Image (cartoon, rainbow, N blue to C red; front, side):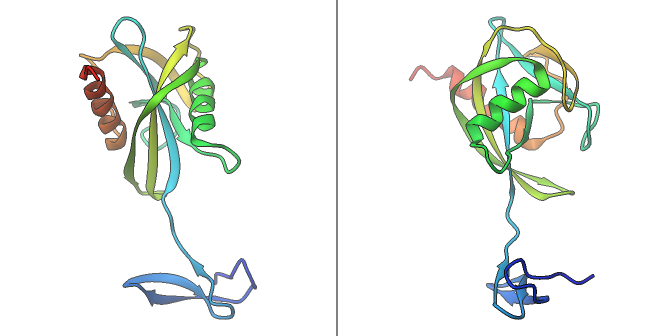
Length: 167
């Protein structure tokens, strides 16, 4: 399978640059870097010490529970993307309270995703699964289902630690 340069159309060749194999243009020298795919996740609590999760309706981990999340579109900011994904997957509108953290998630399909997680204050609690969600509901934070994404688990842990701090 041949690959071609987006800049000039010449064939790309695998070269060793900075100790890594990279596709480089044989004509203009353009380098195709493989970067992590940016994604967002929403950490949403209600007034009952419960966390909002979606049951995934798409691979990977179809049928498993996770934070409302998805990829950032090219024209979006991370903040716009997290609010869009929350609304699409759960029917919930919200406002961003704060950034929880940025996490790396290894995955087969995309190699590496970069997850940006925000704490969101919901505007109402009417839940309606949509988009890539088969179901949506609030779970007691003391009895969460098994979550398959290490980045989501770390996000939840960090958000709960932030909630314990007085300052």
